[in-house]
Image (tube, rainbow, N blue to C red; front, side, top):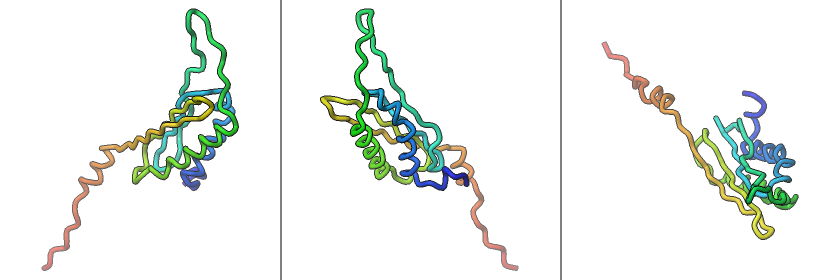
Length: 133
């Protein structure tokens, strides 16, 4: 097993948020996504549209998440792991926005299963006792 796989999922999530910290500091809304396979974080990142135009011009850039917002967001993301049940493959998406000075976060947990892997398990021959002679 590689080094990442030896870390708990909570520790991996903590690393994700440390890696995204600078980018989150420049955003006031978006979606953080974390893809998980075998309880190991693989791909992660942020989906956002940082530039909004109206009437042919771009508006002023809103301030990003404050240090406190980012700390609260990280804590909420770690708390979300308490709601993850038996699945090992999937994605967690955190939609976030700052409204009236408060960070709001909606988390979506998506489990993924692979029918090909299940068919291997369900098609195994059952144990047959040796015939007595």
